[in-house]
Length: 133
Image (cartoon, rainbow, N blue to C red; front, side, top):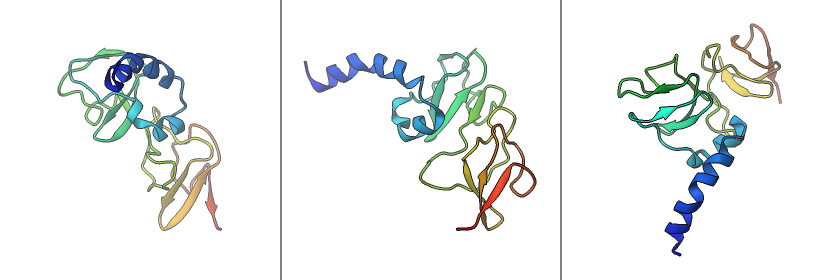
């Protein structure tokens, strides 16, 4: 069996195992997740790559070419910490993709750490502590 054949044989098992990864771990291994396809059927909780970004499926649906993860926020939520090793700029999350305890962001020239789960507030308003070191 060639390496390619072995990889094809193992792919379904790898995808099954990847489902259980928390988002932070999934971001470390984004290649485990399939690219979004306009002809696929998705279940709530499925994760896909789109333009190099990881998205969570919010509700079961059959994709359409104009329902991309970027254009259909009722169907997809962007994972907001795209690289756990890089502190990103804060983005306003929705209720479907809040920040979680320990997430770090940059905002208004400062670095902040999230102090509560399911945080949709702006740093400096609620649920964030400024990182001073």
